Image 1 (spheres, helix red, strand yellow):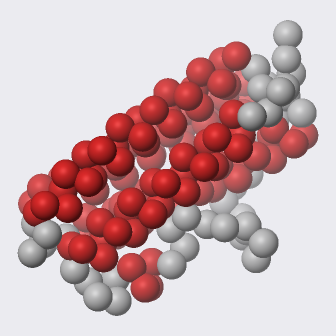
Image 2 (spheres, one colour):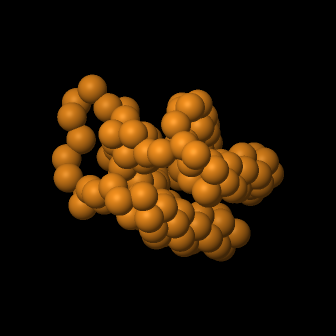
Image 3 (tube, helix red, strand yellow):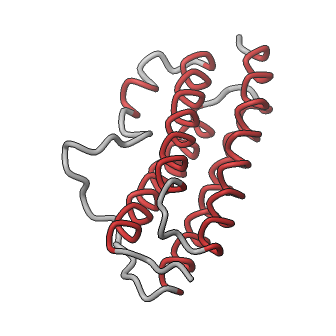
Length: 150
């Protein structure tokens, strides 16, 4: 049976922090969207990331690992939703959708990176695959929302 390594624990905590960043980014996008369909989509994605965070925390704890409490990330780490200022500088639907697409693509890469870990327990792999699949499906929907741009 596979066990958590310190490396896996660290990667999951990084993924958890990025999940929090995405949740905040989607909430901010919903607040700034003028289109009700976009508001609804961004609110749904924020809730999804909130749920992802709880799943990740539960999984990390179930294997005796410490859950990091959202401390600062070193400059070498790429945070998916970090550049909120530039996202809303234009404050229009197009920039919000482009940033959401960029963030979702980055999230898929991050999930893929963690899923490559050989020591990943099956339960963790299942949680991550489920979340990754939801993100991937969301990319299809967000592309259809591009047609709602003003």
